[in-house]
Amino acid sequence: MKIMSVGAESKVFLNGNEIIKDRIKKGYRIAELDKKLRISRTKLEFKILNKCYSLGIRVPRPIKLSKSLTKIFMEYLGNKTLKDNFNIKYLNDAAMMIAKMHNRGIIHGDLTTANMIIKGDKIYLIDFGLGYFSQKTEDKATDLFLLKNALKAKHTKVYKRAYRSFLENYKRYSEEYEKIAERLEEIESRRRYIDQG
Ligand SMILES: Nc1ncnc2c1ncn2[C@@H]1O[C@H](COP(=O)(O)OP(=O)(O)O)[C@@H](O)[C@H]1O
Ligand SMILES: [Mg+2]
Image (cartoon, rainbow, N blue to C red; front, side):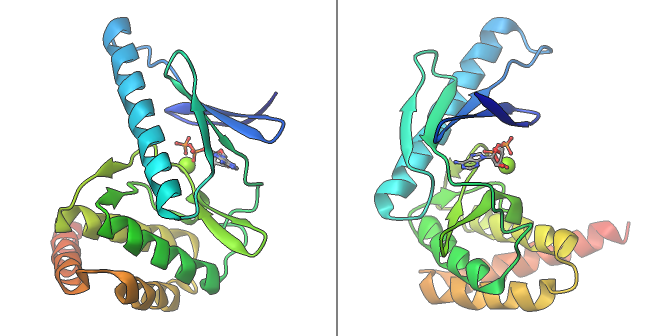
């Protein structure tokens, strides 16, 4: 088994062509509560993964939950992230998938180009560790706002063009684009106000 990543919340291992994502202990939490939280987060992440997979959204194929309920087994998609291999055409494809998720009330929670993997000629979404179910316009707009900021930070030179193109594609598939775009404007102006101190 090869260790792929150690994050604040989880360790990711590669075993053959399977990824094992293990939600790790948080020392500062009471052990019993910690276990409960890890289990409920892991189950939710697995549920979202399954839901997306069954909707035909490109995500790693979910395999199983461990008996401990703190590990997810899923398909390994390779190591080519959109972050390191940026290309607007894949981002546009992701926009379509994100709009479809939002239509079904699935919020990703951590949209960045590091959580998008290119396999073959297709883009896949990974890491539903902060995902949840919601039909709130605010939650969908926040998902997009986070992606915009991630693009700005990591793909500064192309981000304006990339984000505009992303939104055009998102709009094409979203069932309530006008409401979401309006809320996005509000979030951004709130943010500008805060940034000005
Ligand atoms: N299904 C997968 N296929 C390929 N790589 C993966 C997969 N799942 C996770 N990874 C790798 O492990 C890293 C961490 O996994 P991720 O689900 O993003 O957890 P975290 O919450 O720690 O960011 C990813 O950035 C990616 O490099
Ligand atoms: Mg991640």
